[in-house]
Image 1 (cartoon, rainbow, N blue to C red):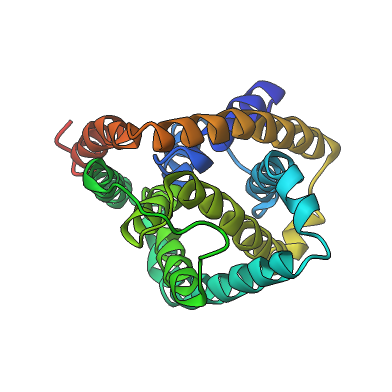
Image 2: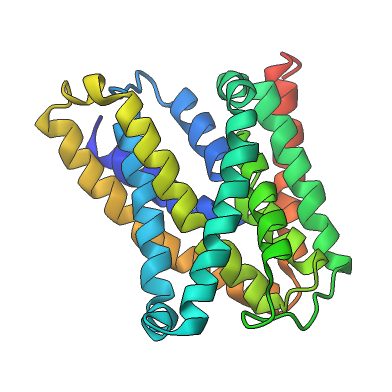
Length: 262
């Protein structure tokens, strides 16, 4: 894998992880289109995801430092833990079907259309007054389960969780921030699981791939920071639904390509 390909995929991952357009769908389509693309196991993809997790930690560093050692911080960690259990339950239940979908462009297109329709709904969701101090375990578990549905390529994790958060009455900015924070344990958990599953293939990784991982991971982290700021602004200004204008036509095109019509 060349450094230029690693850089492009890193930027793509960082932007699409948080913008409601599905990073998994875009990454799968991009890797299908790159001639001769290959990687041993999932090492490169895992590093890209770690880069986006690092972007969230840096973006929320002030809040995280404020939560350390406080009762409020422990409560929020508990909510994230509960939500992550919900993600694991729904995500692993659907994992087999999702793995099949990753090599089916038509199904990826369907996922993009679903994402577009879900994000479009935010035009009519005003959100509520539930902030980080008022968020309870019930809402956290529901959001965690919803996040697990994004195991399908083309289905946006951020799109689903932010829309669900607004529907559950979360304050608009907090709905986005909770979605960001909820992504971190999910990303770390899935990455660790995949790396352990592919540990024998990782031994085959040469210095060229490791260098590509460094470049791709850094690109994912930096572009992820840009995407985080864009999401906060669009959710807060109530124009988040406009991302559906991108997902819906793209999904239709991918469906037609997958069906052999185009």
